[in-house]
Length: 84
Image (cartoon, rainbow, N blue to C red):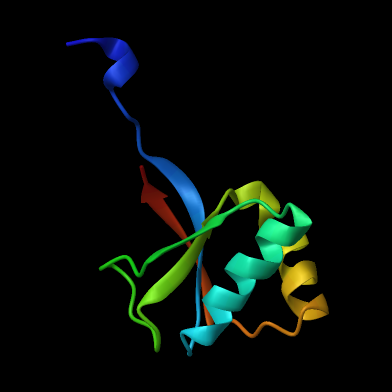
């Protein structure tokens, strides 16, 4: 097997939301402002009010919190999960 094709799990920041509109708003606003991360389906290990979540690097936590407060985007919880 080619070692370049092996993916490793990495601890990532997962942000959950109570409504579907919040992660969609974050997706639109973050792309416009160059904020890293992306919308993903809610991981099965997490329970939340919405079926979507935001995945980002752990190092982006503080800047994401500040950005979401600035954009009035409400989140439900933040988790650190091992993911690909």
